[in-house]
Length: 359
Picture (tube, helix red, strand yellow):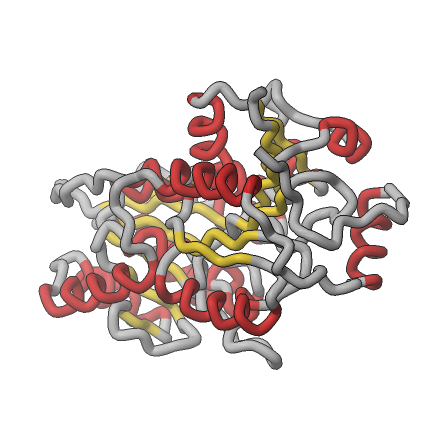
């Protein structure tokens, strides 16, 4: 019998996370379906034929394994609940109860597939504390297509990718001084710019940036960033987790008003200094590149493009393991009610133990 996998998402940016997993699952002859609990994700899935439209369809599908690129997942559907994460540890801001908000345990997952030592070390501590889930380091499916890394090739005109997060106080996209500086630089013909913006940024801001389009400035309405990463010389960003993905190529990143003074980034705090920082980054400073290496080793040390395979192998193996030693998941009554309200599906059914199929 083939295994039944569900890839559970909310936003369009989760498609590049799920696509390598879908490819891996299909290659084994197993069944894979998608479901989005929000409209943004539903629109992004319109071109796929293996989509479950309603939560009732999900319940009826009875998945064996749920691969989740969201912060929570319905507790009332079958399947081993696997957290595959919707981004790298971006280090945007600490939360009140945890080092970073990415480490918040919401009590819905049976298995966490961590990306590298920087996340594994903390989640292992949380595994020991909470005792109702397992943590295993696998690498991240989204970056599988990035490998093998292509060698940097100089272009006649430097290609600069601009990426931005959606949180207004952290986002360069909302900053008028940055907008005006990039507008000026795009008109000089000195650089070629590509721009991607987070799907949750307001349309008014997106349209403002799209107005800059010219022969040296291109806006990309996509969440599939890897092809753009590969032909870009440097990245200009704020605190977006695209920084971490881009750095896996050992290419320089110029960061605008980043929350932390990381030594593997080139920092700039004033729009008037952006051009000078661009020119410095384009020299590929040897000391900077050396500092990126240790960061990659902590973030995501896997360069084989096989993280999806590790995730699927692990999920199937853990599905059959005896998990009776684990504690019940927390009651989570408020969160469970919010999920039911969001989905318009009210039931008392809830799986308090990790889903298990005995061999």
